[in-house]
Figure 1 (tube, one colour):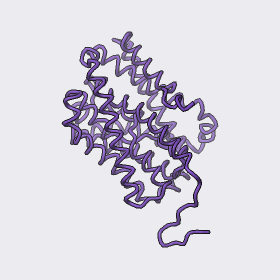
Figure 2 (cartoon, rainbow, N blue to C red; figure 1 turned 135 degrees about the horizontal axis):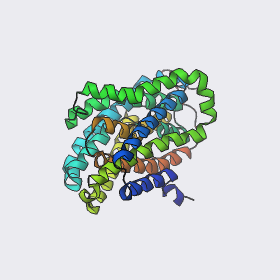
Figure 3 (cartoon, rainbow, N blue to C red; figure 1 turned 60 degrees about the horizontal axis):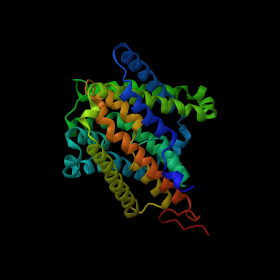
Figure 4 (cartoon, helix red, strand yellow; figure 1 turned 120 degrees about the horizontal axis):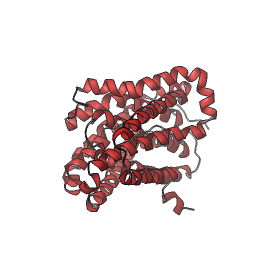
Amino acid sequence: MARSRFLPDNFTLALIAVVAIASLLPAQGQVATVFDWVTNLAIALLFFLHGAKLSREAVIAGAGHWRLHLLVFLCTFGLFPLLGLALKPVLMPLVGQQLYAGFLYLCVLPATVQSAIAFTSLARGNIPAAVCSAAASSLLGIFVTPALVALLMGVHGDGGSTLDAIGKISAQLLLPFIAGQIARRWIGGWVARNKGWLKNVDQSSILLVVYTAFSSAVIGGIWTQIPPLKLAGVVLGCCLLLALALIVVNLLGKWLGFNIEDRITILFCGSKKSLATGVPMAQVLFAGGSIGVLILPLMLFHQIQLMVCAVLAQRYAKRPEHPVEAPAGEAARP
């Protein structure tokens, strides 16, 4: 039973299958054009449903915890880029320039939404704060990530400025999200009742994007560019980056005096990176380039973080119950 926690889930297996299919049967010509259109529509639907699913009440309940949100923001968009730059002497010899650029891109992405909240819930953390923090990270990433990509990688989107990239990403991700929030009053109940099968939209969108990205990369010769030794280097680099992030984020939560529930939220919201947001953003920011190589570290990091965080969440969930810690200056209840 314990062994099964370390085995890949169905989505991970589907992701591996899609990469294999794209490697053997890449989309080309008119077929690739059709897949691009379908993928863009699927991404818009994904973020529309994110908007429709997100409870405003839960966001308002957690929005006041500004110290927690500030720390998560600094870890997501400050700590990770610093780690990416600090690890350059280790990663560059291991993976080379192209894949190191993929690591830098991974480091400037926003946090996940669904899995950060799910792991916080499983670990009995501060769920309303996790909802607010993860959603804010995802939305702020639309503006912060292109700016960091321009600063650290010298990339300004499809031949335009950072503002152009923000505009394109906003049109593809933010506008559908806002539309979903507006439509929530009419469809929110239906979305909540059908969330079990609607998660397939999330996963299908990611699989479509990965297929189109890897089809383009295979045609460009990705597998001749990445020998097995470099692939092993990417896995090692992802493990090292995640381990450092988890250790530093956890220590920061303790040093700043957060209680255990808040520290759990900070850990799962501040140490994760979003594949669902990162892949669509890469399509806009690196249009015309081979993003298959670029998103490879992100794909591997995503799977590793899910497996590691699943184990951590289970360990936190088994901790004994204890009284909620009283705020500073307020007497604890008996």
